Length: 172
Image (cartoon, rainbow, N blue to C red; front, side):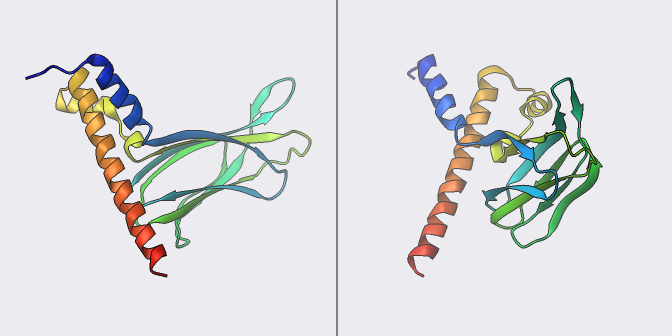
């Protein structure tokens, strides 16, 4: 049996970890109205999101109060909170399509700019690997291999989804 070079494993981890989507977005909020972010997600995918709002005052940064509403591609409300400064939501998608997260400023401060930070973790990026490692008593290379296995499964599922979308588009 031939042993793998450590750099090969590291390269594989880097390449495959790029397939999981996790990212943060920061938006300047209008004084009135709503600002939304959407993400196209396939069915049966776990989504975890943290968000927080703050005023961008020159003297000090203070928390802003916002409303947050998450809707599915078919318009079902998945999360709705009002008058909050920070929060989080989690759900598993039931249908494929664009999931919409909308924020509106609840506060009466009209002279200071506010922003909302949104941190998305979708699919394999949403897994809590620390608790999995403790529960299954795995560590080191075994844990990294388990992460790689999850990433490969996510890539495979994504390719199947893209193929089905392409075939639907092709036969229009």
